[in-house]
Image 1 (tube, protein in one colour):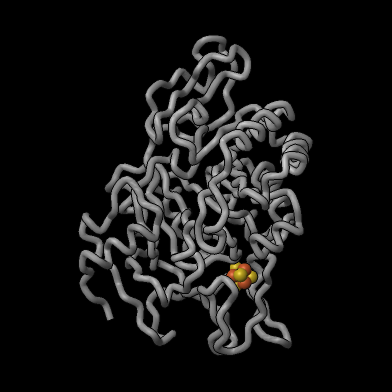
Image 2 (cartoon, rainbow, N blue to C red):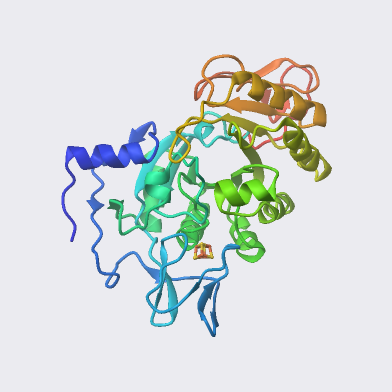
Length: 377
Ligand code: SF4
């Protein structure tokens, strides 16, 4: 079933994963072309959080609660009912593997300047019209070219490439839950941190279990409107808000990303309500990243987000009491720099994903001693 990868295959995989600092293909990891039959499939495992119902086996990982009859595949495209048991088909078969700067996640207050060994399998439980990774998120592992990398290999590679963390990212780690959980447990034992980059669309129980081994999360808060969530993302707002509170309660370092999509999520009153909610729920110490939209997938007719809209959103957030507000996907400027909220001096200067200055010492501003929230070592 496995075959050697040629140059064209490699380029396809690298592009699908949005580009990282380096691709592991060049280090000799052998990719596999999946078979067409569901069994035998080396990369399957009995799924967690499943229950039997009269209408089929139900997955309780995310609010979609897929209920599947024999042979049916899930909304996220990587779970299937085989013989009355739900299996994940995304276990040990990432379709994207890169070594990234942690700033790319984006995480600005978590081990700045470090590397994150980043993996994703095919599949997602949402269907965002603007998805930038749709070539892997809207596919099943049967349709992507995958690496053969069980949890122990992921950890081994993270160590080999001197990564301080492993990031579960690019597509949606909620849907490759078992792979994320098992890899995270092993990583913890080896002193490697774990990063979840997710839309946070997950039920409480599996999330609390995952939080026991996750050190940092960047969660997309896609808008502050249930109606928009339904139309733009095929999801719901409330589970994401509940999830943000759970990360906070469980002590996971959190950064929040809000992508501003013209005509969809650029209403400044809505952005103000979102920021007020973050403040009222004690989430004002966590960085908020406003991210610029670039036309992609089913929204190619829209323009990129005007810089003025992003700047206005940033002002609104700062006025609402959010302490660290960044603007992402905009080259140049000082939108990604960190300033001390007390003495306003420049603390971390970033040029792209590079750190050019860092004046945080032992978690404090080097100039005035103000404590800067984050994970610094
Ligand atoms: S994780 Fe996948 S299978 Fe489970 S409920 Fe969500 S979309 Fe359905």
